[in-house]
Image 1 (spheres, rainbow, N blue to C red):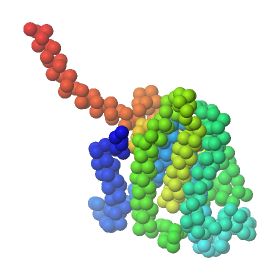
Image 2 (cartoon, rainbow, N blue to C red; image 1 turned 90 degrees about the horizontal axis):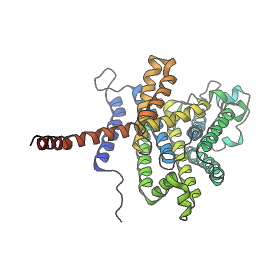
Image 3 (tube, rainbow, N blue to C red; image 1 turned 30 degrees about the horizontal axis):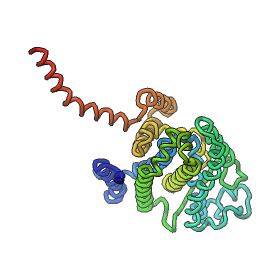
Length: 378
């Protein structure tokens, strides 16, 4: 049996070219002074870095929605938990440079906390917090998924309870006494691993690490969906009952891909926080999770590359809209989703494939038409 290639040759060329172009942006930012033709602004670098984090979250969602048929409306909670886990380290790294010059973060001093709560233990260790980035979303997804999939909750019911989960976490994190900064969350980060977090070189490194993780996540997801495991996941999506009839237990397959998706989303959130400089409970709002679904739908779900394209396209449009017509963005987003659902069910990638097939068939059909015309004349 021949092994399915990860990507076709043209797709590999396209991916590598896009990665090289993206990797060039922070280098141009550092190499050329402001005002030079080749200079890329720090704002653009930060914006693209943020988009790459969103793209990784959309990719994680596509793995469960596009390939396994599990529509989650609560992936925002995994994204935010990864961000909070990294944010705890960044808050500890501020040291006594806060407004109150205390060993405690400013929000704890303001709320008259005297010591760190127990769950902040060891969070001054970078690698411990990186482990939390993976473990916290992963364990939550595993426990939640185990009970949901074991109870055979699926379809719209599963989507609703994922939305309820992220909403419940958002309300919990809004409370000041949970020890996560309440409404304001974590912000005012100073340094990471001893380096100034606002230095252009630090931002460039964070950007390039994000690009590397996005590329790694894409290759990992593609390897999974082209393997035997991927074929089982697609069988879960297409006909779960038939899969059970031939002897497979879909519970563990769904649980694996659901947990992996949550971990990828958590890593995306952890990469997002130092680049944006803030994490607060609004990242867990149901609207954010729904936006992730729209990114995947616009780009083309079930394609892996599509959600990445969708995340860049929708967020690029959002950046322009919120500057030009800030009050109209939500209406525009809703309209985009309706139009894509009605006229582009396969998203941007599906439309591109359709146009390509049409262009390919045109030259072939033209001589046939001419031949049939000459026959009629004869």
